[in-house]
Image 1 (tube, rainbow over the protein chains, first blue to last red):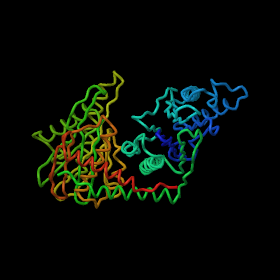
Image 2: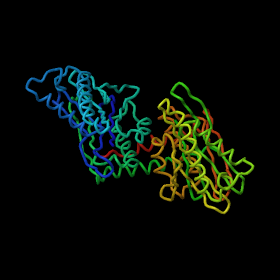
Image 3: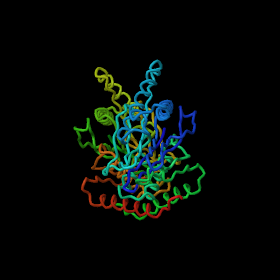
Image 4: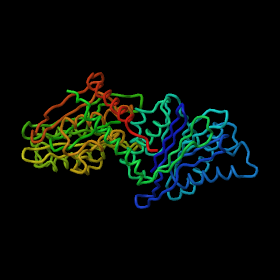
Length: 243
Length: 243
């Protein structure tokens, strides 16, 4: 399983992914699920992935190949596509095509594969955009009303986002919100696991403004998780029961 | 959809259910999902239900018929069964048999029905016990390590329970915890809806100590929900971001 979340805030975008991959409960591995493509100052695209590793790895590999191809064109390279909408379309088409190929191969064993992606990006002169790309290649976009998108094991971590995240949320608070959302998910679902990848893209920077990997034994993340538990228990103690 | 939760605390048991039933998004109705069977001081059994309404209603009806049957025996009446384990077995067998009957009827339209139940009870001289009965009729039991059980849309409301509920939690705090757990679920999933049914069974009372229906416009529940949002936002503001 996986948990990835992206925020589209007035001040920029915040992205967080876990790294746990499992084929059954007895085959657990760590794989990066955050992929950054950038030409700093000109264009930044970050992709978060959930689903079958064979699908997501092949999709990312094909996107890379298309970028590096000597005759890369606007139609197939996400680094040349004229708009972020075109970028989402290229990613959606690539994902859908890879998924179909692999699904076809899996047919014999009656297993079905699937994957979805969050795509965040901005090109110079354009708007920041955040998309959720479905396994079929279609996609939806974050808006003022719904400024966050999640893929994978999204339910445990949604209540905190619903309550805290607004377009006006600062980048600092946005990072806190996604980390606490991840913390709730880590506690409830063993198949989501550390380390985490956290990235911030400030508005109009057109590059990854900051990124960091948070390891399992990160004392600051542990302190934050502990502080949040304390705050919840404190808050809980102050609420009056209806009578 | 549905959300029901039961706590097994040192001081007693706390049970909460919603009442929303839907067949598709355009056919929504209110049905009680909490059923109480008691002979006060001697035996109390509370059943919470999730799943296909046709299965849960028929199961409850058959359990009632068995109780009222003039030749009701230990083997089929949950009000005569010698232990709470036997009660869970009778309920499990009845549920499994009803589900199979209905599933068989549905076969033609390739639709499958399912249902699960939480069973809480105590008989005089016995221990309080809390079970989760699966659609197949088998069941698990709450323990010291896992003092709560959930059915239906359980994920949104789990983080608060994980953080707050321990066997030593008071009945008052237990009620707060299940109501806040429900509040998070109501916010995130439209197919879980008010009114709510809340019941408390204090240890060794062998009856429902208190119960109440919380209506949609209940000002105290609204105040509690609002207070919790405030507490979360306050707590969120006090946490330091890792740097």
